[in-house]
Image (cartoon, rainbow, N blue to C red; front, side, top):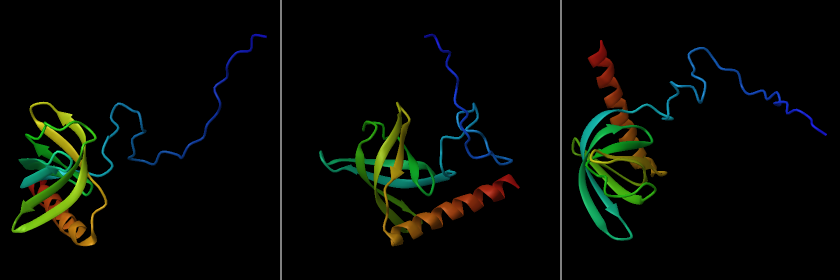
Length: 135
């Protein structure tokens, strides 16, 4: 019996104006926008107790990009402390991507409310600063 394959008709949610279909050439990989943000960062890998000093170049509500911290492989769990403007933010995170010779993308885990408020404040200020620059 030689029956030809028929692709099932799968209905997904409709795409709203301004959205980009997942899988398209221009689809964004990030769930939230990131903004330029320069600050000192201290990173600790808890198992080996390796410590790194680095600098952030971007920040978002869910993570950051850390320059010159490409010694840890993808999926390494870390503890990160970011210091800027006499404030600090601490969280557990995970290395989500590494660009050899440049740095690493870090995704933050769930953070305590107090730490999240600091992060939200920084992201809001970075967003406003970017808007002003574009005007």
